[in-house]
Length: 257
Image (cartoon, rainbow, N blue to C red):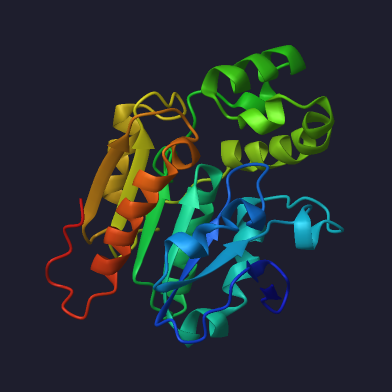
């Protein structure tokens, strides 16, 4: 494993000859290891994964106080993003981080080929309900209803005790963080969602279209919030198609779905 300069970015399988990188941002409570196996399924890419403060390589750091503080950890590494062509991907809370990181890099004059997002409302929308303002019982009930906990964590009291504070810290930022009206990308945005996912409504997903002046496409997979794991082979096959489209030399035809 190799790390970026502040250990917020990790690569489990370096591919120096790869022509582009995919930088993956995890969901609430997640870390870089969420994407450990993706390099095997995206053979043409060098896959990097993000860590937020308070977990894995940044476990000794306090949780971030805002999503913008998280984004700053990555935008400070503009040299990394200039080294090769790069695509940003984020799941759920990670979709917000990916979007805001892409916009910050865009403002710095750092090119990003595209953003791939999954399982989250558009970045400029407020949540219908701020889950972290609920009582403990209602919080857990709502988290269960939304399907926001992987089965492996739900099934273990020890893992719940370890991960729940991390999840709650990220969900607070997810509740409060959003883009402003002038934060719009000029690169393609590809969105994935699960047909049974209750985290975002149809209209909240469709609102991603206004987040970019470039192409927007949306594809739904059968499943709930963690369809990217439950339908991993099909999902990653679709991602390969999107990545091939974004990295082709002739960028005129960008329809991937």
